[in-house]
Length: 546
Image 1 (cartoon, rainbow, N blue to C red):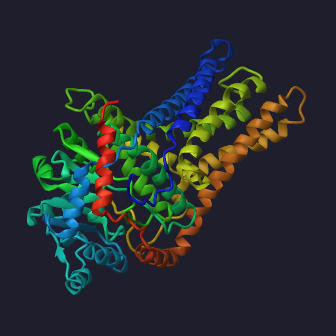
Image 2 (tube, one colour; image 1 turned 120 degrees about the horizontal axis):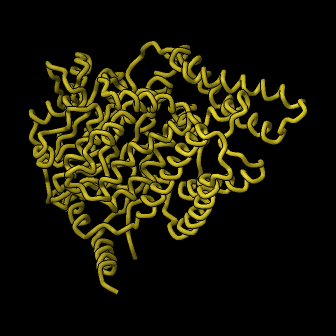
Image 3 (spheres, helix red, strand yellow; image 1 turned 90 degrees about the vertical axis):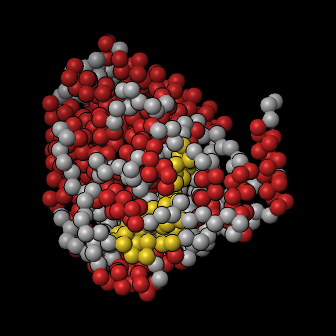
């Protein structure tokens, strides 16, 4: 009999069947690459080069993700984890714990939901609100809620500086970091902290989950996060390459002290802090249990800010992280950190592909010289297998994730350019309080792409009756461009509507925060002596050479 946590994560690794599909996907990918590289099918050399880059990035990311995901080989927790949890439950083990809630202008009602949930977590700890917004109302509320309140006079280095200032004023052996809108479960500490039993573990990361996500942006952002936490991070556990994501994480203070606190030279303090710790030989661990629930960005402005910050940080690591230069990182760790930046290059590929139908319909230029049936025979299986592998591993996939990822493409490209030229970026909160939202000016690149594809469709339709027109190729290009018009139009509509719904948005977020705490948490295993003994037997069996 084996035991383990009851999880809210919907994905359960079906590794054997996934490996079969991945093998087939590798075959059709190779089939497509050979076709793409065949000089006999090469069209306009410049367009072909751009397509080769776009498809190369897509294929590389797909292969790298499959490699990472399939590396996840679930192993039972060692007996020491169960022993720590039992001792924490009985009070035999009582480490000092500081829980930091970082705040910078978020609505008081939302912050207080997190404060109360953090305060009420099982296992003795001290809860601190780190207020970079200097809110007297929040200070007074913290006094009423009987939690600590810290405010600093010099607001430097954004969130990392806020955390480091609190580290200097506290002394807990372990430090939990929560964003203001992430509500922890009552057993957050009981489930996550025992993985610190290994003295070499610097931090334990838990997933982000968004049960109240409603609407295009929130659902798309939540679905993208689901892919990351249910597929990618479990695989990175195998390579000791899990990196901190800024919230729902527990740090060992001695590890942070060794690197003089959170990294402050970048707005992406989480990934850089992780690199510095891994370089010094520290380990990281990902717990595949939802132990906190948050609020996803629910309009384009906070979503774009979040995506820009993440992409900029990933590109910083890729270009200036010294991953392959006298680094103490393992090759696996270097590769996984590199993938963080390469993943955002998919947006460059998306922009290239978004322009292809228009280039063909308006100028008659094509990257491939082949009849439609030949192209489809090579391309369709490749694209279909990539989608099938993702759906198989996730147990489903929402179209909103595709729409929002396409919407974020121009933002990722801007982050790439600014990172290349080392342009300074000011840190801003992803979700703050009621404020004005920009309208159409937020999506001007999307408007340009929309108009380009719309014009191409009109020109393509007008050429269909003409003698000599390749009706099949023009028809496919029109259909392709029409999909982009629909997606881009939906994003533009979202930007136009958002400024008119600021009050409703804030109320929805307040209700979402309350829902995050009110929803029942799954029943965890009661680790009785009998079950712990059974778990230890399972672990021993796993470790016994066969």
